[in-house]
Image 1: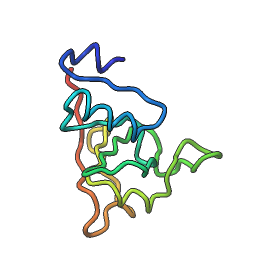
Image 2: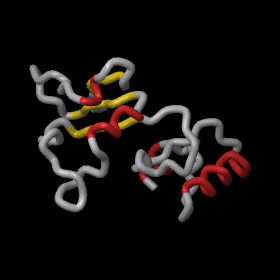
Image 3: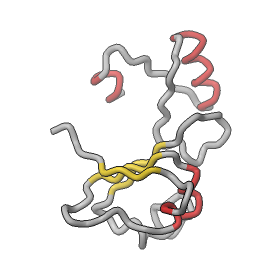
Image 4: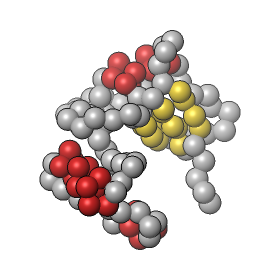
Length: 115
C-alpha cells in the first residue's frame, strides 16, 4: 500500500497468484509495465527485466541460503538479473566481484536514496 499512497496515479493490484494479478492489471488497468516486489524466484510469470536491489551494508556475500540464512538464491542465480542495484554501499567500498560479475552478466549500479 506504500506504493499506492506515494504514487497516486499507479495502479496497485494484489492477488494470491502473481500471474493472475498481472493479467488483471493489464486487462482492467491497461498496465504496460508491471513491477513485482520480491518476485525474483517466482518464475511462473514472464518478464523482460529482473532488477535486484541488495543492501550492501550487510555482509550479503557471507549470508547463508535459507533456511540457515536470509538469502533465497544461490549466487549463480544472480546471473538471471538484468540489473543489480546496491544501496547503502559505504563510501570507498566497491561493488563486490563474484559470480554475478561474469561476462554477459547483469549491469551493476550504486543506488542513492532520494533524500
